[in-house]
Image 1 (cartoon, rainbow, N blue to C red):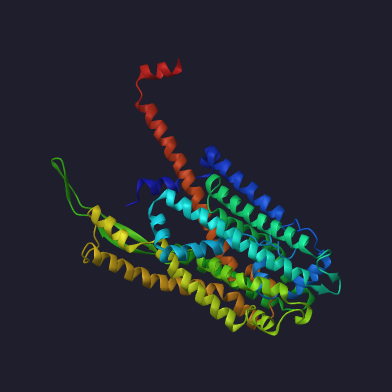
Image 2: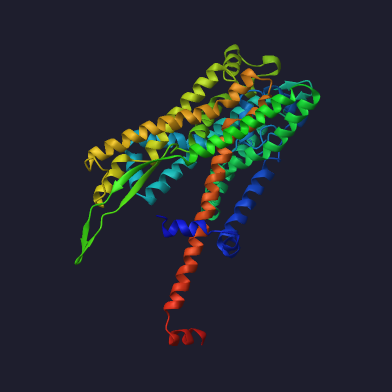
Length: 463
């Protein structure tokens, strides 16, 4: 039996969108914020020789730096003010969530509700600035040591360049952090995810054009191009299916007496998503992989010059398609899939709420046994979800290792990028539909109030 809310959701159409002025303002604000972000990816930091840096980046773009550039919307290859992107904030969020699980003080703050959440967010911002400063300083030192055939990358090296680079890059990260929060509050939500989404989508047209250009030049066959595009379609369909997949637990409510009437017991479902963590695991895993290797990539000079032997070895081993990189990436994705699911879903709290309202799972005793059963089911489906995410995200690694597809294409249109793009798109559409649904509910309430008003009260309102 379809509920009234589901029927109303099915009737959401463009005419309702035209009347939802608040939603239109939110969408325009979100688009404006993303345009500001894209403009910032084209503003280079001061003191850089563009030709020399382009030569350096082209040499290192086949590694993990190419993935970093994809998430940054091309800001790294231009060494723009948003080159660090939002990754330091994501790394800080990871650390704070891990600390919340082991530190009693932070755990108490988390339980304090809105005020505690604000305090933890403030600590996360401070840690973001610290991590961004560390990364920016490493980049500034690495840039000063680069020498290319076009000359040095830094035109006037020294402490002034280091200071200006750190201030510029840290300021860009802090601005994006603030911009993401504004999109979440005043836009259509998912501010941080939308910023990463915008960077990925911006590189897709050029990646497709580059792939067809390589086919035209004869570097790769046209059959391989169409095979890759067909694989992309299959991956998108798989992502949509898995992101919508749920395991529904039957919840039964007993009969209850209200006044002199005996209310019939009803049944509902507790939906458990296969991928409860969403796009968080690949973003967190990529962020942790990028954190220690960003400075290492910049420290490697032409043909490996200017870097110690161990640094060159680590950089090459963590490159795209390398077994060590794939193993660490898959392990981090699996870990964060379980970790973030445990953060956002508490089986014990869910079981307590069911017992509080008289609900129970047929065949399972309320309380601790219900919590154990929910945790058992959640662990099994999270295992499937974590394997699915790891398989999708390792797709570009496999493409690079076994086909002549360029690494830049695999980074932009590979499994990780497609997972983030499709998931964020689905979440954004859901946010828009919820706003439209709320707007239609408001319209129905106003109509009901007008119908319930007496003729005298209507005449009074006209006066």
